[in-house]
Image 1 (cartoon, rainbow, N blue to C red):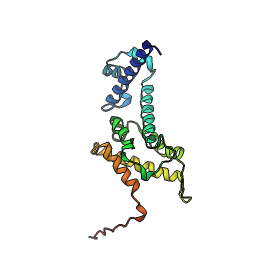
Image 2: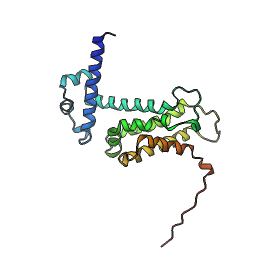
Image 3: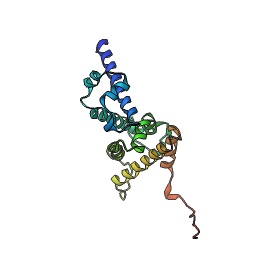
Image 4: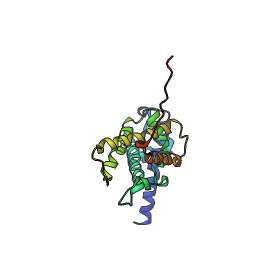
Length: 204
């Protein structure tokens, strides 16, 4: 590829990124239906012609933002086993768990999803990916025949999503590293051997 083409590609990526960031910023305070293309390009400091070079409608821009998030989610989820033939939870380290870094990098979008219901379809897609990835990518080396794989993946997906929701709702109170460490501790906790003391509430 020539330097000229490289420069053109770089300008295209820069323009598209500016448009995406503009849309996300506008959605912090306005309903998507109320946002115009003029609003988007003015905040991005671009002209309408630049917008129409890349997108026909604002819905196409929104869809591309969603696709970017899903693509990055998949990459971050697969990070712990991307170069491995065998994946062992007990040998997993918090440093290779990247899903919370992904959430932190897209904090504005996750906040929008969970606090304004701006993208209900995106939350559903995220959940579906979290359920689908372990089923598609991982084959049980020592399977328990009593466990339904689809139900197990749903259990894990909603557990991870629950941690993400709690993290967002607390305003990202903890660091991404801390969240990864906590997930690892939870995964390694042998609940079958756990003993609990019951707190009996006094009836009034």
